[in-house]
Image 1 (cartoon, one colour):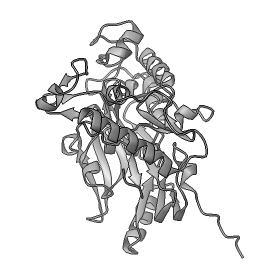
Image 2: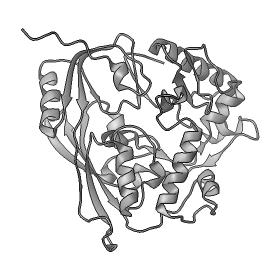
Image 3: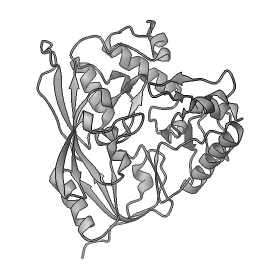
Length: 351
């Protein structure tokens, strides 16, 4: 008789190292296995959690009362070889959902494929990037995504969405707007070729590179500069550094009406947007509300390097982390009238 399999603990599959057991666990190493696992659970009326890198999840201590499907698909196909002469159309790169995002970025940089170098060091999988429209240091994946291919759980079929049909906006997409419906199978990117990265729009990165905003730098230098900046903020995974036991930035930067923005202190950041709103800094609001780096209870705290990250200092529970997030959100709202919104997905928890 086969030995019973110990329950799979989701804390072993999330960067926060939080979360109880999955009732059922399936690891899908091919697209066919992925579709079959999700379809079987749907047919049985079983709740499904699709998990890949686990870098954007906060899972309840009670675990997940259904089937967790681990996306472990692999594959990267390009229509050009590294070092090929530049083409006017660039390189078309299709990547399986389960591939490590930073591995793909490193490969693109080494190959002279431009447009995702400022997204270096972001943990998680390729399939998660279009859902959240992952972005950092002036780049977003929506700028280079050509197509997202998904399994539509409502229609029981494979669908392809061109970038223009993905509803991309700041940390948002049609996939996030209809949570759980679309299981990403692969993502196709259109990347220019060259030795220089895309124009650097983010002031902090430009300063690090010693260039002006809007200027360009060697693509490998951009990657190294971004990695250095992220390490300084505890945003590059390191098992020995509890500041990286996080889900990255926990709150998104708020978008405010002109009236809301006018009510903030005069020195609050305000970045005008095309739709007439103004974006401000969640980190600025948190710090001005009285929260310092390292604020917390011992087992959970704000990062000692970056107030936007909530961290597990070891032995924490998900409920403790959410309590800290709630404290930060509520104090910021009381102080400034701005309600912060969590960026990570909460599973079995509410803020």
